[in-house]
Amino acid sequence: MTKRLLVVLSLLLTAGMAIGSQVSAADKVIKIATQSPLSGDQSAVGVDIKRGAELALEQLGGPLTKMGFKLELAPFDDQANPDTGVANAKRIVSDPAILAVVGHFNSGVQIPSSEVYHTSGLVNVSPANTNPKVTTRGYLEVDRIVGRDDVQGVVGADFAAAHKVKSVFVVHDKTAYGQGIAEFFKQRAQEKGMKVLGFEGTEEKANFDSLLSPILAGNPDLVYFGGMYPQASVLFKQARERGYLGMFLSDDGYDSADAVKIGGQSLLEGTGTFYSTVSGPAAVYPGTKKFIEDFKAKFNAAPQPFAAQGYDSMGISLKAIEDAAKANHNKIPTREAVAKAVRALNDYHGITGNFTFNGIGDPTIAKYFVMKVNSADPAKWNDNPVVQTLDIAPPK
Image (cartoon, rainbow, N blue to C red; front, side, top):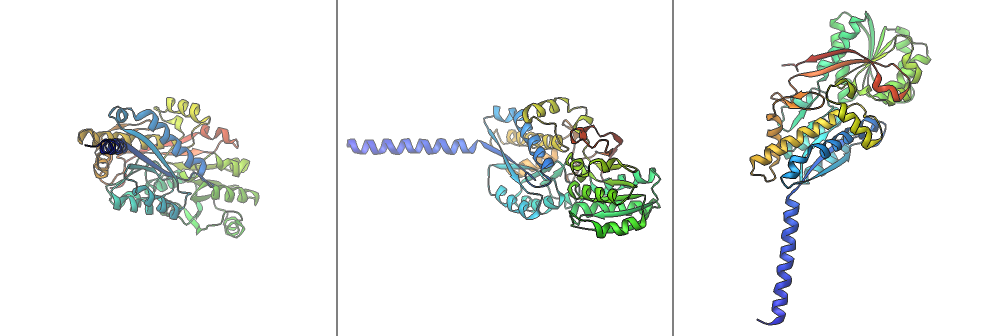
């Protein structure tokens, strides 16, 4: 054999070993994606969902790294926009290393995006989505760790009835989330004997004069808003400026410190501002003390609502991947195996509760809270008092 041929063979062998090494390394990478609004007017909550998931990946990924896997976070900005969420979802499912998705914040984004996850068999663990359709489609790949709007709307209406509300004007933002919960609230309010003076959808975000005219004319005991805080707080502030002194009530889309940045002192006037939520401040959960400390140390800020749920959604994803990998002889499992492993978890011990999923991916018991806005200082948002806590099973 000539010297030149030996050199060529040596080079080919080296290259082959390098390629084999690269393939082997690539085969050991596991990614978990997040989708939430990282920009725009809902980013205060969306960024902290991602941060909660990031912290969990660092703290809970040990069993998988000991098995030789490299874990990576793949964050995506859905901008609270369905089209963006779907476009991101298509990119996510095209990456075979991604074995789970934590997200979204908005049900109107999650529902179409999860259609993409479903067709690709990629599990989606939601920390925040509450529209019933999220799970009632019966997809194996879709689970959530929070409650549902067909319960949360009832919780809000029952709270209003207990506070002697006799009349209400209902407003929603025309999204799957906002309109859905507003309809559940309206139905329960009527069952409780409340007079619904109006039920209006709006996409307006700056000037609510045309909507405020019938509200002020009817002078309801309560204005209910189904939707998100950037829109609701502007409406509430302008209503106060026009002289309305009744109660405001919204949903978990209102749960952000930015709500008082917009609404300010007006939210404390009249008979006050309240909101129902499936996610109380992190401090209301007995298992979150260390999470809050670690979150502040890492991100130099207190966690926004749903950050702790982002942590638990990531923890559930990691545990399911671990279980599926062990069942696959410590090799990277299939997406289907991970989806089945999530659904098979029994009493997963998270920081916001213990989670077991029913046959469609709802938690078998979910917590619901009613909160009161107690300060115009955004730094004190997490100190808003809990005025009611309920543990409720999902509808059959």
